[in-house]
Length: 146
Image: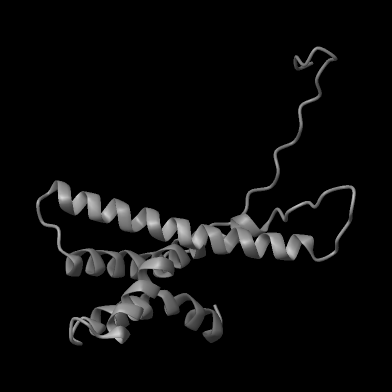
């Protein structure tokens, strides 16, 4: 792993620790709200997507056959990753908050701390490799295997 890869992997956990540090600012501070909102919207999802990102990138998107656009795959993959980052983050926030509510220990600081720890752990995990595509089994006309 190159130093640049290490820096990229550690950006989401750093944003989480920065958001935890921003809790020391006054309650109505816009900087506090912005740091926490940006981390909650993208931090956990970016770290979780980093774990499975190489596996997702092994099969690029295919564009519509009517209008071949050479940049379609790149833009489509970028949009897919962006949406996955946001939706994985929202899912992680909801899961952690629900678990803390269920155990009667819910507080905003605990949710933020748990997500920061999860993000740090996900950033330290090894990346998943893409598996080779499975060979297709020949079938008869009615769809049953030979």
